[in-house]
Length: 296
Image 1 (spheres, rainbow, N blue to C red):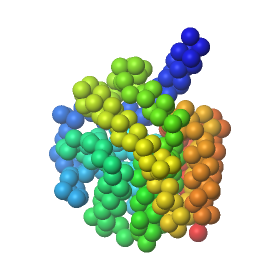
Image 2: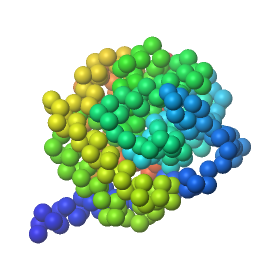
Image 3: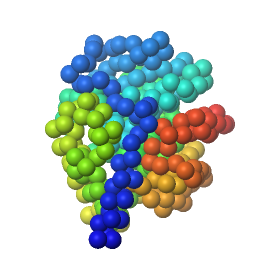
Image 4: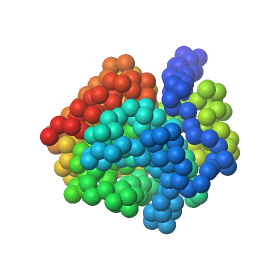
């Protein structure tokens, strides 16, 4: 009984509702034209990259280009509302994308082959080059953080700076328990589940979540649970690692591991932060990230 109670407490923490800013975009079947305006300063468009039409949002006119990379089942609009709205648009040009199979980058249907993180990293870099950005920084959350780590390691000449939070370079047995706790979306809280169902429909949402758990779990079968630990020494750009002290999905040792193995990286802990700290504490997050990006 005690184990069941502990498991229930973990699931409740994992599935705690996101703030309103994290709500998803309209249902996919209600998509507008390929390019549309979101307010007066954020534009949305699609561009063909590596055989798929990738959706992205863009704002700002600054010389420093920044790509925002979302987490599992995430999209530009659902994961980065406060950043698209409030980051300094005179200093930065901000691009947030929907990886293939997520958000408005459907089709194709999302799948998780063994190299899905490398595929996302290739898509992300090629998207920015297709948009004519010669050099840019990466801000990656959760799965997007893993993608950003890989992109920075494999394309050091293109990446100016790197910020990651809620990311991990390995999958442990402890991680597998956390992932399987969110496999069944019917157990998610309604406030979290409903926006996803509105965006994807229940069947796509449920099947993709299960497929993600299987996809991320396959790394546990590799030596040391390796996702990208072998690439960390190849990251040459200034790197800022942020971690929430109350993150229920990514234990703190992952952030410490990244800090130890990425040369001259910085680690910043937000004691009250959870997995979505950039949404819950958007003002503080934006401030520390902008300060890092502005430093020479």
